Amino acid sequence: MQENENRLFKFPKFQDLIIFEDDNLIVINKPPFVASLDDRSGGEVNILRLAKKYHADAQVCHRLDKETSGILLIAKNPETYRLVSIEFERRRVNKVYHAIISGTHTFDNLIVDLPILNQGNKNVSIDRANGKPAETIFNSLTYYKHYTLVECKPITGRMHQIRIHLATQRATIVGDSMYRGKPVFLSQIKKRGFTMAKDQEELPIMKRFALHARFVNLSIDGKVYTFEAPYPKDFATLLKLLEKFDS
Image 1 (cartoon, rainbow, N blue to C red):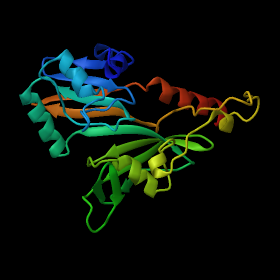
Image 2 (cartoon, helix red, strand yellow):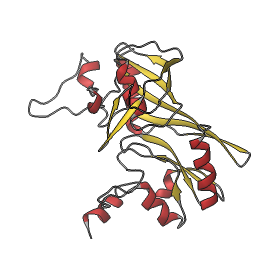
Image 3 (cartoon, rainbow, N blue to C red):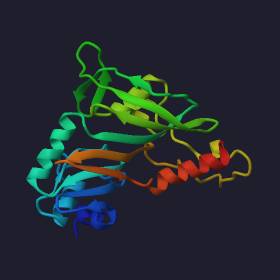
């Protein structure tokens, strides 16, 4: 059995990811570390490939970064794909992400509208002269001593938009090394009573950046849909530990 086939069985069954399905649409809670679409090498297991094994005509309507978890919309036929694509193009899809960021930040409908330039190879930058318009609204949800749970509402859909817009506010997502975000270790927040063997390396609580697509609301052919994706285990665990040791 090839390595890629072995990796396939490490992921949950596609059916177990589904949070909604009807004749036209599949909505899943995408796990982290799974790409939304085929990459250039074509070697990795991804959501599109898994979806097509479940339903031959499936098409992923948008994408999430590989490490990002949460709601992903999948059309079951070309007409639904077209209708959903129009909603995205006209910015009528309401998306809400949750992020855990370093530091205590009070965001009250903060609007960040800095243009983003896609430089290729998954590199983006803020570029007022050449970048494309990008707008995100931020609201703080829960405060801890050293971290904040933030609601992020991207109005546009640029690559890394939430991540880089937060970074411009000196509010990097924990674990997001691309934008100088640092991981959270239990020893940092549980300073008393924490012991570890000398020859053992401590691993971060989350092994990715803490970003989750929490809610999506849209209208398809006159029918309104609202979806919510529960936090995955790693995101929920970090919040639980922050509540216990960093409140």
